[in-house]
Length: 249
View (cartoon, one colour):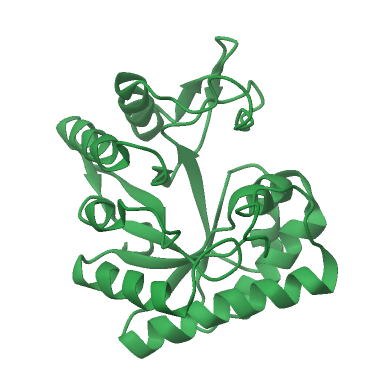
């Protein structure tokens, strides 16, 4: 049976976390950069454990006002120090609660910047490699994120997006552009099945694009997020795809 992971970014102050944790198989917990604090991290990790959901860190640019969506907000040693504080903070909380930090997935603009920026990708990978427990590195396949994972000896989890539009080069349409997020539930569920079964999507210009996916992201910061996540899981399972955390395989 084919299997795939479903992940969601949680602990960011949205009201859908509890519902999403009953649906997804892994979560990426905001750890104090773009959002989150010690209290929210404890609550999210505890809820993830209760639901049997794998726990990962979701560090971002330390830009709470911009929710980590301002490109090139920070770089170099200052970024390394901030990301180290974020990821180790969550790793410590997870360990105290009896959970393993299974992966690290950068957030927002940091993720998008690092797709093309080798130096940024290396900083995130370096931070990940220094965390006890050998967490995996999550990012888009065939980008600087994957190349950095290989350079730092990290297991890599290729991520694709069920509710985002793609460019012909396999990158995401920027959020600020119309149609960047699929609001139509049928479009999102159809894209999820194609990604899981065939490893492909239709780009916004109509081209068929190959996209490798070990995990599918469902954004939890939009109205109806839980309903969309449930529909995606139901459609995948009805098509013979098992939902299972990649780090637990």
